[in-house]
Length: 382
Image (tube, rainbow, N blue to C red):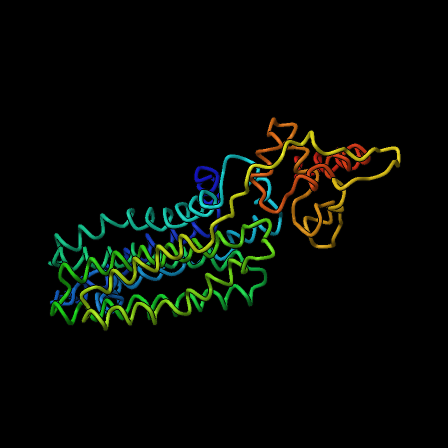
């Protein structure tokens, strides 16, 4: 999954043009700094995830932040939409990939491109240190701010991209950024005040903040890949959005109660909740399929195996025949069966699929052979 995304992303203009542009802008920014004799100085509050540090460190870091921290990570708002709108995620889930592997592959690709672009700028950082008299700790703090911040923003952009419509994506991304600023800012501010600077406690809290909001962003994207939601379940994406709303309050409470010593624990706790909030229910072992009679294609009496009807709904899986009210297309099940996937594996992989639904799908395949063949062929050519 990661190799596929990297191959596609390296060809996109969203990577190529910023990559070339930042090289030119970096040279211009350094030339301006040397010409004006600009030299930044470190203070006790020089540390990771300090956005003011980037703003006050001269034109070079402003350019780096604009490209690697904002433009490239925010380009991820289109990533999950491509998979969901074209139905590619349904095909991916028929393979050995699970939902975590899909979203983590996209995250590694998006953040990796930002990191790769930043690494290409390291020679300029060395020149600033050797010629410009910039302190190495100051440069390291700016670098970790860019890398950590871009990881959080990239995860949030991927999570927002799983929603339909530009307005929904912008709203979800704005909520994520607001939660990130408040949820990470409160414990970081407390840790800085407690240690009177950006010491060990501050940086442990900063790493916890990156872990927390990367997990939340990916959990949000993962929640949108569920093919079926049980009747007794709360909508997974709604739970993750609620988590984004309440996390700053929980983290702030932990920070206040522990006098800012354990704000990082609150952040890691919210990360664990995000990772566990959307767990696919496990099915018990179904009874043998031989206990059920297959509906006869000659119009004979149809038993309980066909009780889950095959439906076509406009806008769902391209209008293809699906099982009941799910997004499980009949042609997908037939293609998986031809690929050697067993019936028990299909029932385990699709929580919304029952034995009756599976029998109804096989009956539909027998009675609509030409339609299924055409759907499989069309999706292979797409």
